[in-house]
Length: 88
Image (cartoon, rainbow, N blue to C red):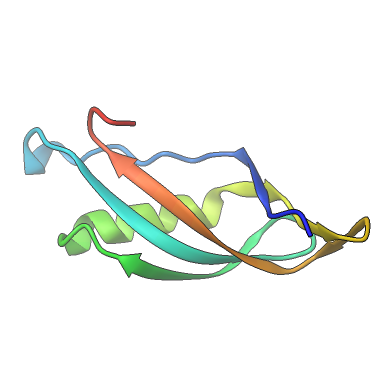
């Protein structure tokens, strides 16, 4: 089995109201057979609800080459990280 591969990565901007800084949100996402994110779950929060929400919106807009099993596209779970700030 090959995992989903990101092909369109949507990166959210860091809100100016939060000043300068760095943060990240780690997701567990389900990518369907067409490469769309159909389910997401925060597994490591940024500790800021606003950043988590921006990251979730970005994840849902990202697109993937779907996972494959024996040459056939399948639904699959994978981890996906969204970074904010200078580490991107």
